[in-house]
Length: 263
Image 1 (cartoon, one colour):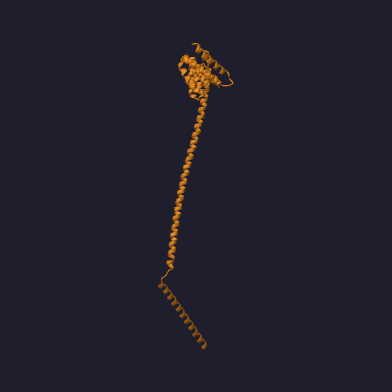
Image 2 (cartoon, rainbow, N blue to C red):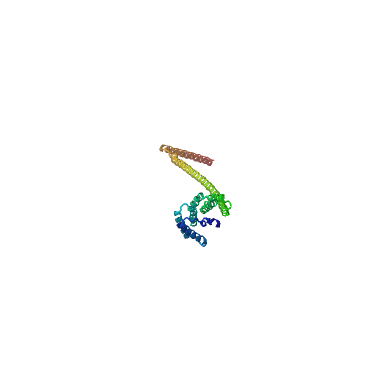
């Protein structure tokens, strides 16, 4: 992403002399800035910070100088203060008059927004830059790169949404199954309670019936004293009648035997 992190630095080389003090501050700021840019082994935020200080000194003398303001925004960007740099480049994009200068401001604005992952904003800024300078290849490249990232993000967002909806449906079905299961369990518990109630009622009925039968049984076998005496008398009468019959039978037998002997 070399084209993206390389800012537009042409304004640093085009200085206008407004006085000894301002020129000294700007010259020192440019020197620090270029030294930091040329040292590719690391990001020298110290030099960029010092350059920012020099540019601010110059702007204190001449606040309306847009070229020094542009260099200040570049120094902020190099220190990874992208939000501050974005605000400054956007302001410059509206203030600058020359198309190429406006294009550079919007180009760097797009870079600052891209570093903040503001893809839609960066794409729009690159388009503004190309409207001012349609032949700028670095801006075209950055625009294509930002659009590629956006397409990739949109696809991922769509995939994430589909997965989220899928998981949501799963959760919904799971909740529905749980509700059905809970309902079934409740119905089962209710049925078990009813069965237990019916069983208890049946057991109570059986016990009551058994108790009633046990109460009735001794009543059926129980007889009064008078009935018992009558029954006993009847049995004695029957026994006497039987004995009389036996005696009569023996007497008749004895008589026949005697008659037979006389013959």
